[in-house]
Length: 545
Image (cartoon, rainbow, N blue to C red):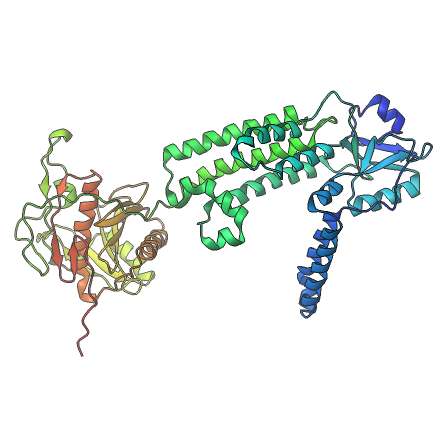
């Protein structure tokens, strides 16, 4: 559309065509004033009156009256003609005719939408200037009506399915070589190109976001009953839902999304003539839907990549221990201590590494005078987050070995183990479910993991300790997520159970890492008071009165 309209009458339009300016002013034209407006608009207006929240808020008693009036309007409208005829009448416009020839002597060339606002604007323009000014485009109403008639009449048997799809394809095709008719939308001035562009982009993104939201929804019988269309759309998101998708699935969605973007652009620009005066709105609408679906596929892959991974715990075969733990109480091994990282480097040849048996470290009480400065700073931050005063322990009974701080927090549902290597603090947060599953979060100075590692004996993840509040929040989110998934509450620790939870957490952590081949350890069963490895239901604390 140009800034100024092209002035012409119906005879000039028939001989010259639309040319390059779709903003026209048709002179000496009129239309049938008593022609009815769109029946669909009448139905939607009746429904809108019922769901008007402002009016109902002022007078809630009117809702019954409004509903009765709406039912009567809908019944009266549907009694006049079947729904197919109502749709046909709504899409077919009101013909314009030359005042000199009258309605009988003019072949319909331009029609006016039956929308009440367009009809009102056209009346005002004709009465004031004896012309209609507005946007002129190809009239695809007949093609739309034929397409709707074909779509709503599917074949009764599978034998006619091919003919039905062929009929749909033929009904949606337009003849570019025919003279055709036009549809005019009354406008005084053309809209701003910047505003129109922003509205188009916003509509595309909102449409795509709606598809993504539908794709993330879980299916249920209630959604299928009350929201059948969104439920049908949600099937497209099943491969990516709840973290199922991996790199291959995301690549497939991105690949399909790019293909759909190309097809949508081809449909809009090449077939539909987007931005040109001789354009086809049906191709625009179909291409817009294809574009939005392509954007939604790419957005879905991005959301899946940033979403938490599934809570499903894979079944991994437990290694057979060489020697079972005979004791049913807290186990302190008399052998020299070995932590899991040192046990993992038994041999430089990865193919011939000897598997070592994991052994609990020897744990001794310690004083705070051997705690590193980084450990002390981290424990101060934890105390600011509501953790208890730390207890100190040393793995080896040597004066030079650094002490470890053990703190309880979050209503005694999280044990924090803090140490350092003189460069970065090492933090391990542990929570345990009542079914015996430990949830562990370690700082990235211990190990780095892009996604949570899950096994039947435990779950661990890594997180940055800066800020420490974010690491704690990530740990609590994972613990709550697993608690809800497994329908098991989080265990509340006793103040005297720090050592037991400490040893239990380390054993489970070493086992999960071994199952993911990060370590080469053979981890056997063990019992630490009421905490048992592999995971077993944890009894409640006995209350002594």
